[in-house]
Length: 375
Image (cartoon, rainbow, N blue to C red; front, side, top):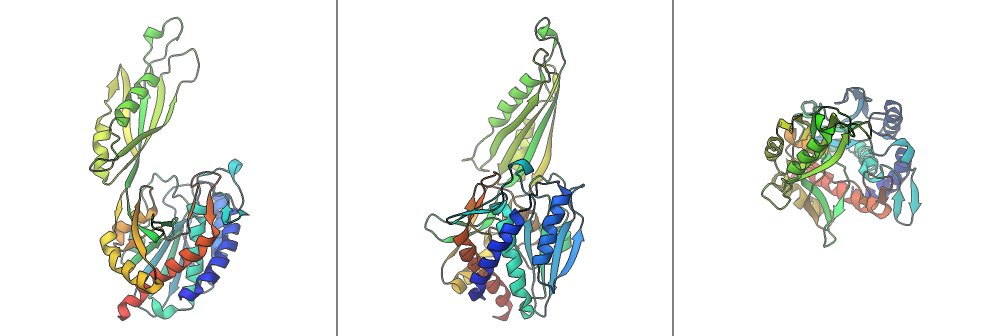
């Protein structure tokens, strides 16, 4: 099957161009439907197609494709179609040397293209699996609701997620087996308005209270600590007029750590009130961490032997739906997509050469996984 890598890479570049050609910021139902239609067309004709409710209300339904086989294992391929970049900043795919530049190319339409090619390749080998499923969601980038699909794939033997791949400092191909927990903390402030020129002392500034709260939260930033906690204020909104003490506002912070429990002291650091301004602190998003290094070690050892070069276990701070699936499917491996950069910006890019090398990695992992029961 490794010999199929050049074919997968060639098809992936063409399908990546089509997928990037559709701007799909989270929440745009019409554009999401266009991207889903492309993926349905790229799935093998043998695949059973199902549309399932998205975790986030108001989004396009997610896509599930299934192949039935005569083997033993049940394997899930996982990805997302939504992007961060909005329509006005969207860039279609353009090639510049080895770089395939385009919005959403690395996060994660390049990985989706490789996964679709893998589905087509495995459609010709139904003896290798009992069930092969692909789940493509439309809300990964901005989801605050509970992930809805864990129970749907309970009992599956493995989950392979195609977020962007990477190399080690030594140049070895790497996959992701560890991710930090991630949370979005929001502080809502309610103060009191007053004329900022004639009677500022009568007001209670939501802006100043939120600035104080931001400092308290940032004081817990400790990336070298036991939990490797990062606490970063990212958005502050307050005030509507230049001559009024701002009576209300909102602070948003991004939190990452090895454990969800590490976020509790950060929440506790914000009091209910600062200078008579009421503060309401909530976690609007909390994603679990992922730690599958031990479960994945034998698989990566076999895959390295199949490939003839090392496939190394690595970790990443960014969040991924692989973390949700790892709660249900202990053998979850992420980072199987192509290498690139510029994620979450209009300047995203994928290395064209890596489409081949990462196709080889994905095929080696699949061969090692699906051949294992025969040994």
